[in-house]
Image (cartoon, rainbow, N blue to C red; front, side):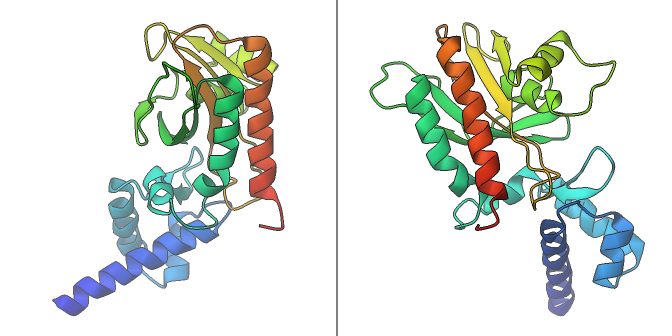
Length: 230
C-alpha cells in the first residue's frame, strides 16, 4: 500500500513538472504518452491536480498550471512573483496606491501578489489568494481585453482593448477605482497563463499619471519574464 501511494505521488509530481515545462500546455493524450500511462489513469491524475488548483484546463482544453502552482513556487528565484515584486513596489509608489498581480483561473481572477505604498495613510489591502469573477474588476477585464475579440465582450472589455488598460469603479469595493493592464507573454513558459498588473485606491486616482504607469509596469514585467537572460 505504501509503495502504491508513493508511485501515485511520483506520477502526480511528474505530471505537474511536464505541464510546467510545456509552454503551450498539454492535452491529456500528450501527458499520457509522456508518462507512459493509460489515458484513464492520466485523467484521474489531472482531475486530482485540478481539484487542488495545481493545474487547470485552458480555453482550448489544454492543461496548464493553476494558480496554486504559482503560489507554491512563490519563493523560488525564477518565479514570476519574484520577478514581479520590484515592479509592483515601484508601481505602488508611483501611483500612491496598492499594486497587485492577478492571474486568470477559469471564470475567476486570483490575486497572486500585492505591494502597498509607503507613507500613504489609507490604502486598500488585497489578500493574496483572493478571487473574484473575471468579468468584474479591472484585473479580470484587462485579461479579457487581451484575448481575441468576441461578440460577448462587454463595453468595459472593448474600452480596455482600445486603451491598453482597464478602468473600473465600484465593481469590487464601493468607492474603489481600479486600473489594470494585461501582461503579454507569448512564446515563453508562461505563455498560456494570463496575468495582469494593476492598482486600486479608495479615492479617485490621477488617471493621467496612473494609467500610463500601469501600462508601463505591465510592459516592463512582460519584458522581464520573456528576457532570454533569465
